[in-house]
Amino acid sequence: MNKDTRLSDVLHVLLHMGQVEEPLTSEVLARSMGTNPAVFRRTMAGLRKAGYVTSGKGHGGGWQLARPLGEITLLAVYEALGRPALFAIGSRSAHPGCMIERNTNAALAGTLHNAQSLLLARFAEVTLDQLMPQPQEASSGACGNGAPAAEGAALPSQKGA
Image (cartoon, rainbow, N blue to C red; front, side, top):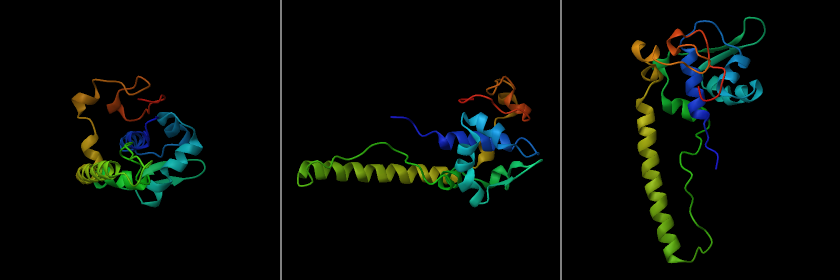
């Protein structure tokens, strides 16, 4: 099963956007996510609708943060992406009359609900500015295309940056 990396990808892009003043094109940002501009724009649509980013068309257009990173939480980004599944654990439904299956499903559902509640509560506590590397951390590694992450002007050109 493929992992859904949209949340991680979008957080990465938003943090880079927080390092620059000028708008960044869909092409540049899509390349940093390892996708194409059309998929990038679809992915970012919820964030634009929620008021976390803006986009402009034409010459000089592109994507910019609409709010400071300190005003955007992990929960807000997660919700703007449509609340993707946090867990890939499912329940059996082959024998709905089986009490063992029912009890197992109930235990799993309750445990997963509790885990999701804890995770979302933590997401609400973390703002994006808290994810920015400290200057000494930022200079210690490259971000995809060999540019130090603290430089801010260059975005990664490969997925997984």
